[in-house]
Length: 172
Image 1 (cartoon, rainbow, N blue to C red):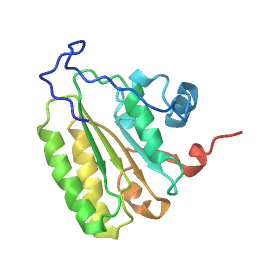
Image 2 (tube, rainbow, N blue to C red; image 1 turned 120 degrees about the vertical axis):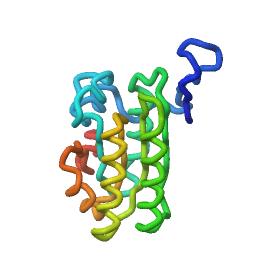
Image 3 (cartoon, one colour; image 1 turned 90 degrees about the horizontal axis):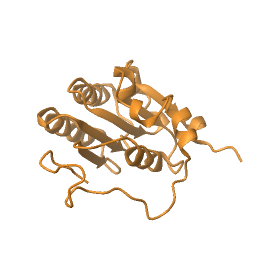
Image 4 (tube, one colour; image 1 turned 60 degrees about the horizontal axis):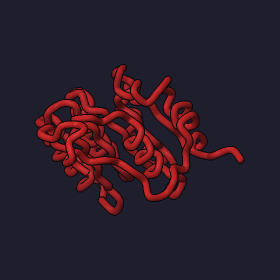
């Protein structure tokens, strides 16, 4: 799902986002989870432009990312969605560096969604953090998921808001 700046909102070619299945998460739940007053506030402050979902596999981090992308106003934005599932730490860091290069060259606004950043040793985690920060500094809205064992990455990103596994557990 990549939108180029050449398409105008409302035109027949402009992509429409929809879900086949209903959202797992309600608006109020997602807003509270992310600490936003409304979905339009995603990106209004520097801290709200960088969001990590640090949770065990199969807790729905990818679903949360998808739900955020469906709710955040995106007219004219170029959306970059990547999965790093199955990547080793070095190839994940290289993929993030390449993505950061593309995002920094993209017309504003840009939205970046990355699933499953793997656990990495310190040098690779530092490269990953630098790539994520480069996207953030370029003005992109960045949301990504990673397992708790990859939490070292977050120590290099103090500007990042974090949603933990506990936040993803839905109260019944």
